[in-house]
Image (tube, rainbow, N blue to C red; front, top):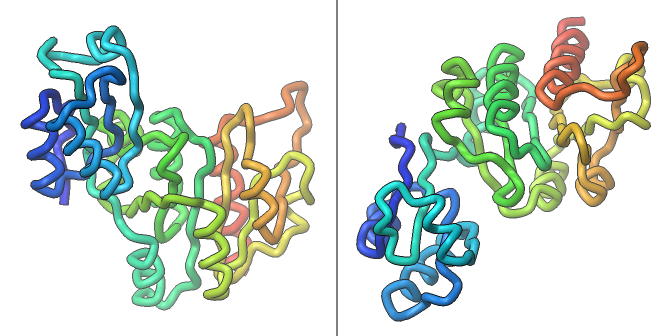
Length: 246
């Protein structure tokens, strides 16, 4: 099911968006304006696990398209999020070992869209992103995915490290992109696998990295020591494809 990308402004509009079941990615609330109606909206946001950002009126004025935000603006996802369980079921139905791509600190929508595109053509069963410090499923992401978002499910989880721990109990191994890791050609990337990609600047977070089974490095022969996150995802994803074809 697809949602239009929406910037929802005004107390009644935002509250109705929650009550109608729209997928809200983020809620901006004026920090000095938390009366009864906005308090109700905040409770709805917390109930649905939505990221809350308390900001000054000037910031809301900048974000507002109508200039009648009444102290609250919500961003709704362009597409509905899937569940990780859906991805595992899809792999089972195809008779394939699960192949997931998990993203840590990927906040650029173009990178997210490009990775979803790579996930689709490499045969991954889905992409997993955290609720915080991650781009949401906006129209920009959809465009950058070149239509792949229509076919490749994306799940949003509260805690990426805990998700990895839970999936490891189900027999899935995890390899993260790490410049200091073992060259990827020497890492066994066959079988049920989750590939973890971090941002170009920060890489994979410490706790997430500690929960991974393998640290795979892409060989670098040039003068620049890193790759764009979406390019790194493509290189590692196709090493997984190569090993699975043996």
